[in-house]
Image (cartoon, rainbow, N blue to C red; front, side, top):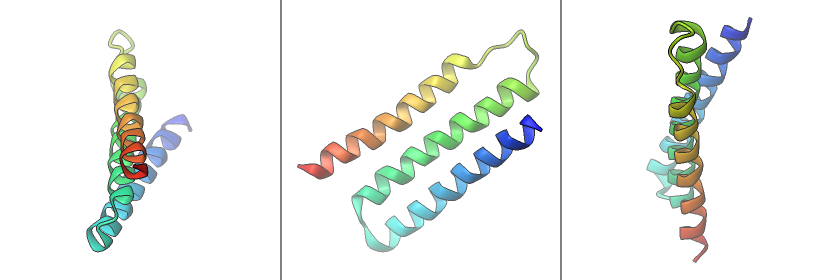
Length: 86
Protein backbone atom coordinates (compact mmCIF):
# COMPACT_ATOMS: atom_id res chain seq x y z
CA UNK A 1 0.00 0.00 0.00
CA UNK A 2 2.85 2.39 0.77
CA UNK A 3 4.25 1.90 -2.73
CA UNK A 4 1.00 3.15 -4.24
CA UNK A 5 1.14 6.26 -2.07
CA UNK A 6 4.73 6.98 -3.15
CA UNK A 7 3.77 6.63 -6.81
CA UNK A 8 0.67 8.80 -6.42
CA UNK A 9 2.68 11.52 -4.66
CA UNK A 10 5.26 11.51 -7.46
CA UNK A 11 2.57 11.63 -10.14
CA UNK A 12 0.80 14.48 -8.36
CA UNK A 13 4.03 16.47 -8.14
CA UNK A 14 4.71 15.88 -11.84
CA UNK A 15 1.17 16.93 -12.75
CA UNK A 16 1.45 20.12 -10.68
CA UNK A 17 4.81 20.93 -12.25
CA UNK A 18 3.45 20.41 -15.77
CA UNK A 19 0.36 22.54 -15.13
CA UNK A 20 2.34 25.34 -13.49
CA UNK A 21 4.97 25.41 -16.23
CA UNK A 22 2.31 25.37 -18.95
CA UNK A 23 0.57 28.30 -17.25
CA UNK A 24 3.89 30.11 -17.02
CA UNK A 25 4.49 29.57 -20.72
CA UNK A 26 1.18 31.25 -21.52
CA UNK A 27 1.29 34.13 -19.03
CA UNK A 28 5.04 34.61 -18.41
CA UNK A 29 4.31 35.18 -14.71
CA UNK A 30 7.58 34.60 -12.90
CA UNK A 31 5.89 33.23 -9.78
CA UNK A 32 4.44 30.41 -11.86
CA UNK A 33 7.94 29.60 -13.11
CA UNK A 34 9.40 29.42 -9.60
CA UNK A 35 6.47 27.32 -8.38
CA UNK A 36 6.76 24.97 -11.35
CA UNK A 37 10.49 24.50 -10.78
CA UNK A 38 9.79 23.84 -7.10
CA UNK A 39 7.37 21.08 -8.03
CA UNK A 40 9.91 19.60 -10.43
CA UNK A 41 12.27 19.29 -7.47
CA UNK A 42 9.52 17.82 -5.32
CA UNK A 43 8.79 15.26 -8.03
CA UNK A 44 12.48 14.32 -8.12
CA UNK A 45 12.42 13.94 -4.35
CA UNK A 46 9.33 11.71 -4.51
CA UNK A 47 10.85 9.57 -7.26
CA UNK A 48 14.01 9.19 -5.19
CA UNK A 49 11.85 8.19 -2.21
CA UNK A 50 10.19 5.45 -4.24
CA UNK A 51 13.53 4.22 -5.57
CA UNK A 52 15.08 4.30 -2.10
CA UNK A 53 12.33 2.51 -0.20
CA UNK A 54 10.93 0.15 -2.85
CA UNK A 55 13.45 -0.56 -5.61
CA UNK A 56 16.89 -0.54 -4.01
CA UNK A 57 18.05 -2.97 -1.34
CA UNK A 58 18.19 -1.74 2.24
CA UNK A 59 21.98 -1.47 2.16
CA UNK A 60 21.81 1.53 -0.21
CA UNK A 61 20.47 4.71 1.40
CA UNK A 62 19.29 7.69 -0.65
CA UNK A 63 18.28 9.78 2.34
CA UNK A 64 20.79 12.57 1.69
CA UNK A 65 20.01 12.96 -2.05
CA UNK A 66 16.28 13.02 -1.23
CA UNK A 67 16.78 15.74 1.35
CA UNK A 68 19.04 17.74 -0.98
CA UNK A 69 16.41 17.60 -3.75
CA UNK A 70 13.75 18.81 -1.32
CA UNK A 71 16.01 21.58 -0.01
CA UNK A 72 16.87 22.69 -3.54
CA UNK A 73 13.24 22.83 -4.61
CA UNK A 74 12.20 24.79 -1.53
CA UNK A 75 15.17 27.12 -2.02
CA UNK A 76 14.13 27.79 -5.61
CA UNK A 77 10.64 28.75 -4.48
CA UNK A 78 11.98 30.92 -1.65
CA UNK A 79 14.37 32.66 -4.03
CA UNK A 80 11.51 33.27 -6.45
CA UNK A 81 9.28 34.68 -3.74
CA UNK A 82 12.01 37.07 -2.57
CA UNK A 83 12.97 38.03 -6.14
CA UNK A 84 9.36 38.85 -7.13
CA UNK A 85 8.66 40.72 -3.89
CA UNK A 86 11.26 43.36 -4.66
